[in-house]
Image (tube, rainbow, N blue to C red; front, top):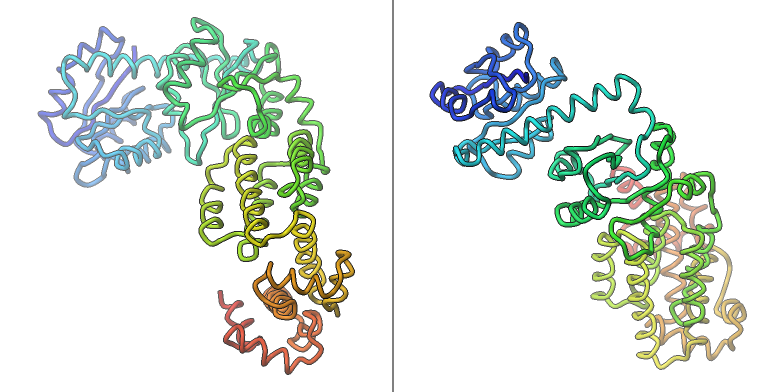
Length: 465
C-alpha cells in the first residue's frame, strides 16, 4: 500500500479531500494529516510515508518551504501540491522545488478525482519499480534495442512534462546528463510512441529514436549520447520526427573530431558563397559533411552581422537577421538564415550597380584593411592586393562604403585602438603605433574628436565596467 499524508491549514478542506476519494481502491491509505508545516515534519519523523499532499498557502511555514525541507530530509517522499491557484508561474515554482504534480482544489470533483489519483499512483509505482531495477543493477544495461531520447528545446525543461506521455508510465524514464531516455520495453509500438510524443511535446522538446542499444552498458550510452546527440540532431536531414539514429554511428562520431569544420567557417568569412551559386553549394555541403559545432555556426553568424551591418546590411535587415538567430535550432534553419544573408549581399550589389567580381574584390579589400589596420598601408597597397587600379578602386570603394578610403581606414584604426585600450595594458603612446598612427598626440586628439573622450578616459571607464 502507498502511505499518504495530507497537509492543509483548513480542517474542513482536509477532511473533504480525504473523504472525496475511495483511496483503498487505488492501493492508498491515508496514514495521517497535519494543519501546518511544522506539524507535518514532526509526523513524517514518526510515520513512514510515500506521498505527501501539501497546501501551498499556510500560515507560518509555507507549502513551498515544506516541500523544500521534505526534499532535503525525506528524499523518497513524493510531494503533490494542493492549491487554489491555477496561475502557471505559481505552480511552476512548486514543481521546480521538486513537487511531482499538482491538484487545483477548486477544480477537483468526484468525476475527475479518480483519474487524478490514478495518474499519481501510476507514477509512484513506476518510480518505485525503476528504483528497484537500478538498485538490483539491472538498469546498468539497456534491455531494449530501441529507446526514445528526449531533449528540452529550451533551458529548464523538466521531466514532469514527460510524464504526460503514456509510454513513460509503462517503460523506464532514465535521466542521462541533461536529457532523458525511455527504452521501449513493452506495450507501445514505435509508431505509437513517436506519434504521442509529437502531438503532446513536439513544440517544447526534441526527441530521437535511437536503435542498436540492446545490452549496451548504460554508462557507455550516457557518455556517447552526451557527446554526440545534440550534434547529430542539429545536422539531421531526415524527414521523420523524432529523428531516427543508430547508436553505432553515434559512437563512431564520438571518437572523431573535424577541426576542418571550423576551418571551412573561417574560409566562409570571405563571402564568396553569397555571390556565386557554385561556391554556395560547395560551402554548405562542406559544412554538412564536416559538421562544425552549433556554437561555431552561431559565432560565424555573429561575425557576419558585426562585420557587414553597416557596409552591406541595411538597419532593418541587420535587425531582422539578429532576431532570427535565436530561433535557429538546426542546420536546415541556419541554411535558410545564410540564404537570407546572401540575398542581402546580392541586393546591395545590384543597388550599387556592381558586378559580382567587383563586389567580391571590395569585400576582400575591407577584410584586408581590417586585418592590416595597424600596419602602414595605403590605398595603393589595398588596390594592388585585390588587383584593381588605384583610381578605379577609389571610385568603387567610395560607392561601396559611403565614404572615402582614408575615412574608412581611419575608422578601422580607431576601432582597433578601442580594442587594445580595453584588452591590453600597453601605454597609450604604444597603442597609437599599434593602431597605425605615427603621432600619439594626433592619435589622442583624433580619438577625442570621434569617440568623445581621451584614450586614457575611455580605458578608465571600460575598466570600471
